[in-house]
Image (cartoon, each protein chain N blue to C red):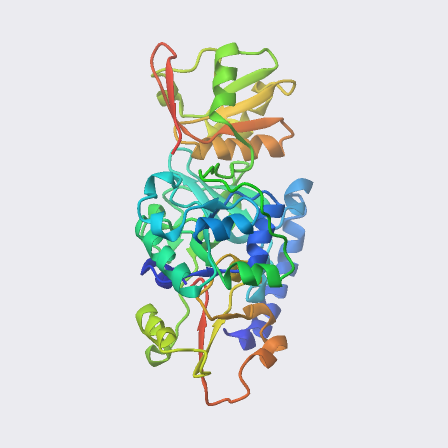
Length: 232
Length: 198
């Protein structure tokens, strides 16, 4: 499968897969490439209409995350293939077309809608377990609420070059031995540089019974505590 | 897959496991509850108290820690320059979600990796292998005519989220119960694929 995917070959996905994504709110992008009038008459919930004729010029509409699951919906295999090849060239690796198109969807007994179609793609990647949003982290870093504690899990020499104001530094590798220093009555928010060590700290603290979350993003901190967060 | 070797492995593992039964009894209760082997690994491997089998989910050279996911659980295991890496040249080359086995031990009160083995590709005779290009040509020439059957051996949800067009789904773990899905004519070509090479 990886070799097949890598060479850009066609990949089909099932109606059941799409139904599950819709029912469970699993982030995905569904593109209906049929002509607008056909798509308006009946389409699958959450579909974004980009008729095949316009698809080649619609690159900007697609999410920046190239790993986003993108599903193409059409009624013919030929059009599905054509749409697939256009989008695949842009580097979307989790791209598939709905096997059997909207007819297979209906045959499975799944509902269609004739409500207004979306024309813009909204895609928010699924956060990892325990991940705090960048906005959520920033508001805690600014307001410093007494019930919450930012835990800097970088090594001591990294932290010496600048820490967030009010944060506590315990490297991930020392957490198990220094649990007594971490207050149980405060919610812990862990950060490192990229999110890797912070995620490990999250698991350690969660197992130790803490209420904890972690920042899954890149963060740079100056000597004076000024910081910049970038999320890929 | 060497299923016939499993019986032998079971005997060996049981012998080792019974030896270890006494030495591991002092472990923390919560650690015992967390799974140490992921469901797909059980097809070929017996559970072993000292070995964590699951998918690689991250590594921090700064914290000298490896993160492995086993079902819904996550384990953090320390490693250092003494830890043996088998099946890959460098730590940084292990790809996310790759199947790994970590032989663990207690060191300074933490879980420590004595060795980490990256799952090697299965050995298949070269004349039994078809590459992606050849398969694409085969599909273009028309599988509908019944010239060949393409089988996706991965678990059903993996098939559902994306498969090679025209493939049918028979998860390897339930293969024996589903041989009726294969064509009656045994002279026809069968092509299998998975998330390999595994």
